[in-house]
Image (cartoon, rainbow, N blue to C red; front, side):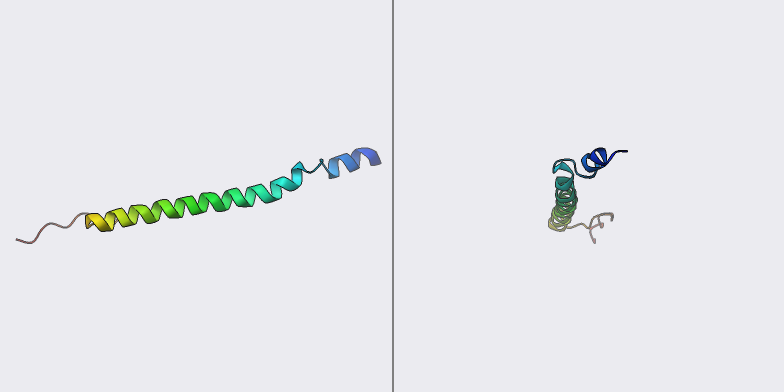
Length: 61
């Protein structure tokens, strides 16, 4: 490759730097969304009197 071509490949006008910011932020956003959804599901289960992943208890007679 020629030197001019190497410079163009090495720096793509700034969009490649955007990836270094956007990708980690997107990963963080997805992880926060999953954690919030899980917390809301657990809170709903607690309000209903059951735990996630467990069978509802039979009432005592």
